[in-house]
Image 1 (cartoon, rainbow over the protein chains, first blue to last red):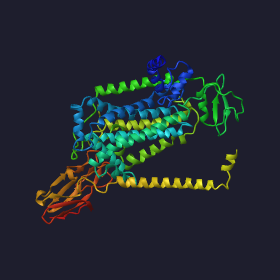
Image 2 (cartoon, chains in turn brown, blue):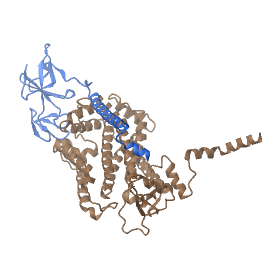
Image 3 (cartoon, helix red, strand yellow):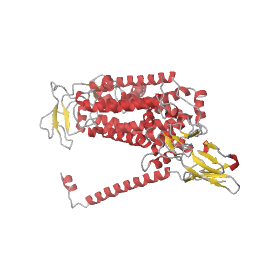
Image 4 (cartoon, rainbow over the protein chains, first blue to last red):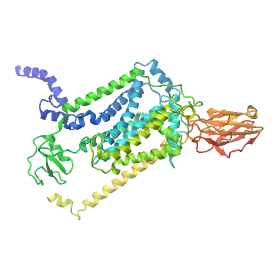
Length: 435
Length: 160
C-alpha cells in the first residue's frame, strides 16, 4: 500500500522531467559529448554538422546572404499562407480583396507589405548570395553541382515573384504580366505554346489569374522546397562552406587513411594503424568519400551547438526586424484596378525584369530570349568552364582576377540595364532624365 | 563467403529474373512518367477558352463615317473607313502585346515606343512586323462583323 502510493508520488514528481526528456532526448548539454549529441539527435538540428568551421561563421565571409534568403522564404511562406485566407483568385474579386486587406482585415496591410517586401528582398538576396559565392570562388569542385542547384533556385525565386505579381489584379500587375508573357512567346518553336499554356488563353484574363495563383501558392513553392533541401544537403555532403587552402600545414596534420569502397572498420585496409576515434561525430566522417580524416579534429572548428545556432538566430532576428521595419514605413504599391483598354504609359515589368525589358526594347528576340538564354547557360556552366583550383574561400582572390572581372562586368551591365529601365525610361519608353 | 559466391554465380536463375524485374520496372516507370508528362501538358492546354469570341459584330456601316479611324480597345481592333471601304486593323502591338493607340501618323505603342503608319507598317521602335488586318464582312441584317481568326492581306477593304 505505502509502496504503491510512494511510486505514484514519484511518478507525478518525475512527470515534467520525463516528458521533457522524451521530447528533447538529451539533457541541456554541459559537455562536448552533450553538445555533439544535441546537434546529432534533434531532427531540426541534425541538418547541421556537429562542428562547423570558423570560416563559415565569419560574417564578413558569407555576409549571411544564403541564410537571409532562406529566412525570407520562411517569412514569405507564413505571410503567404495567411494572405490566402482572404484572397480570391477571380478577376471580379481579387482587387477588392486587396482593398479589404487595407480597410477591414486586422494586420492586413502589414501582412501584405511584409509579403511584398520580403519577396523583393529574396530576389535581391538570392542574387547577392550568388555574387558572394562567385567572388569567393566557392563553386569549385566538389561544389559544382550545388552552384547549378543555386542557379535553378534563383530562377525559381524570380518565377515565384513574377507569378505573385499578377495576383493583386491592378494595372501594374496586368501590364507587367502582359509584357512578361509576351517575352516568353518569342522563344523559338515552343514560345507560343508555352505562352498559351501559361495564360490558359490568348490574353491575360481569368484563366491566367487562376493559373498564376496555383503556380504561386502550390507548384513553385513545392519545387523550391525540394531544391532548397537538396541545396542544404549538398552543403553538408560537399564538406561545408568553401574554405581557403591552408597556408601552412597544421602542427599536427590529421592522419589520412585510405578506405576502400566497403566501409569497413577503421583499422581494416589502412596503411596506418589508427586507434578508432573516441567520439561518435568523428566516425560520421567514414560515410563520405574514400579519403577520411580521423584522429585529431580539425583545429579551426567550433561546436554547432550553441555557436552556429546563436549566429543563425541572430540572422533570423535581423531578417525579421528588417522586413518589419520596411513594411512599417512603406506600403506595397496598389494601382488602379485592371483596365484592359488603357495600358499605363510606360508599362513596366517588375524591377528585376526591367533590365530584360530594356534589352527587349532593342530586339524582342535577342533581348528577351537570345541574350538572357546565353547568359543563363553560361551561369549554369560556370563551374565546368572555370576549372582553376586556386583562390577558393577568399574574397577577390588574386588568382581569380580574370573570372571575377568577367563576372563583375556581367553584373554591372545587368544592373546598369535595370537602372536605365527603372529611372531613365518614360512615356513610350523614351529616354528621360530623372533629375 | 558462401552467400557472396552464390550471388555472383552466373548460372543462378535468380539473376536473370532479378535483372528482368529491374529492367521491366525501370522501363515501366519511365514510360509511365513520360505518358504522365505528356497528358499533363495536354490537360493544361485548354481546348476551350472562356475569353472573348474572336468573331464579333461592331455595328452598322453608318456608325463609321468616312475618314473615321475608331479604335475599339476591348476588342483590340481599329475600324478604318475611307469612302465606302471598311477595314479592321489589329491594335495589338506585334512586339509584346500592348494595345497601340491611334496617333496623328498612324499608331503608337505605349510600352516600348513602337510606331506604325496608318496602314500598320512599322515606322520605328522594336516591333518586328506590321499590324495584322482582319476580315470584315456584312451580316445578312446589315451589320459589320470582324473575324480575328481570319487575317487578311494589308490593304484589303470591304466595300459597303
